[in-house]
Amino acid sequence: MGRSVFLTKQRVVVTPAEHLLLRLDGLATDAYQENMTENISSSEMLYRELGSTGEKVSAIGLGGWHLSLKHVDEDLAIRIVRTAIDRGITFMDNCWDYNNGASEIRMGKALREGYRNKVFLMTKIDGRSKKEAAKQLDESLKRLQVDYVDLAQYHEVLRFEDPHRIFDPEGAHAAFLEAQKAGKLKYIGFTGHKDPSIHLHMLEVADQQGFKFDTAQMPLNVMDAHYRSFTKLVVPELVKRKIGVLGMKSMANGILLRSNTVTPLECLHYALNLPTSVVITGMDSMEILAQAFEAVRTFQPMTDEQEQALLAKSAAAGARGEFEPFKTSSIFDATAQHPAWLGEEPQRLQQLMSAAE
Image (cartoon, one colour):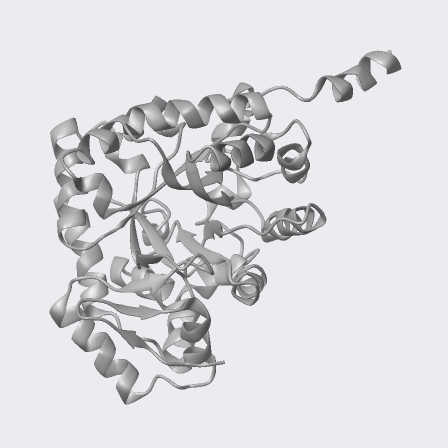
């Protein structure tokens, strides 16, 4: 496998597989370091390949949830999005359920006046039934004021039954394939934050249906390595399959920082050092946006010794999942709190229960 680093005028593009090989084999060569430095001096962002899609995306993604928090007004949200794009962030994250749709509405307004053409736009839906998934996707497109999204993902794959519901003949995947054919979405992925075994099960069920995902999103942070680790169990499988790796919860909305073991920049550097295509991070102020660019500016691939030293700092705090409550509680599980968002089970399955009564 070739390990070249491709340099364009403004962008260095490194595949996640090449990134992983460079790390594992100790091949962070002088040329690689020079290319990274040149990229940072000529552009404020790094760009990486998104799995096998052929798309080039920013290594930092703008998380949509934070755009509609109580302390973020609409003008600030639009300013954050447009400044991020002007400075080189191309990957936009959102979801049908974020803040009752307000996050998509605000991002849609920010993407007016030509900004839509500058980004790779992703959103997520909660529906497991074909009917609910199709409805939510259409609502997302309307809120975002677009004809299509570049990537649509099944949100919160948290339960072992979720893959089966999605790939049911009357499930969400049927809706996505129809939407893809109609030009409403380009690529298909899935997300989840609960347990790596569920991600692997999703891949297994997709295999049984002869389908390959374009992306998968999961928590990737300095605590994850110590408890039910997506980094150890899922990421290698995604790299092998050339599925785009989307990292989230690098700081878990600041919860990781309460451990007093790591800094924000260390959290972002660690996630960037993994074979991620994109590290999605929430931005609710111009200062936090600047922090993300500072992380890119100061990022250099870690040696094994540097990575192990960072993980050693977080080992005790991360051992029981205390600072990853999305794995150990339901407080992050929007679909558990709102099961109606998933849609109804197929009638043929509901009838099984009525027949048993």
